[in-house]
Amino acid sequence: MDVVTAVPTPRSEAAGSARTGRLSLAVALLSGALGAAVVLLATRQQWSEGTATVAGGTFPLTAKGSDITGVPAALAVVGLAALVAVFAVRRAGRFAVAALLALSGAGTVTAALLGASDRSALDDRAAQVSGDTSATVAALGHTAWPYVAAVGGALLLVAGLLALRYGRLWPAMSGRYERGGAQARPRRKAPPADPDRPEDLWKALDRGEDPTGA
Image 1 (cartoon, rainbow, N blue to C red):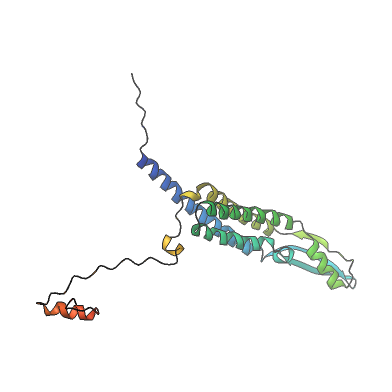
Image 2 (cartoon, rainbow, N blue to C red):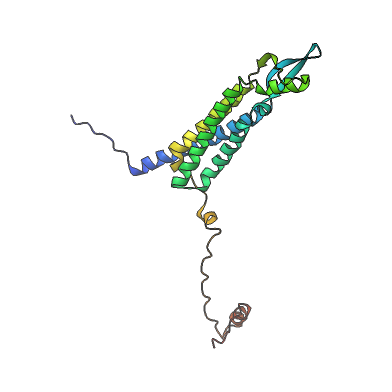
């Protein structure tokens, strides 16, 4: 008994590619936008806390993510811009922008994890409030916000990887925007005015034409 193997038609393959492109695009947009928002939110929160000795007592100190490092927020902005720019370029340009998006996500994760154990920002504050340049922070502790920023960076990384893998299936900005405006279609030449029809003569005069054909 012969076994008949169904061969996919070009139309079905094109439909499958279109569905894959739409799904990957939706996931990348959601992941990239959410990731950038999470990173920007997390860097505005408290990342570390401790105490400094001042006049025989203790003084509480806190540091936000932006006080510890400005890298995650900067890379989140770069990643968000790259996500938008993906639709303005094609082929090699799209691949380069997608790679920038992925690198922004990876850099954000790295910077956030390094900031989770940083103490330099609080050491500097301890030196300021105590007036002793050699003073350091005591009872150092960290919150979960650096790891939240790392999760946001991971979402940016996912968006970049999707753009690298499926970006060729995504739509691009219309060609009329790339050329700086749509090319005007040539106007059809109006038929010559019929001298026996007064309305044709008036229309020709309105167009600035000589109705006599001279």
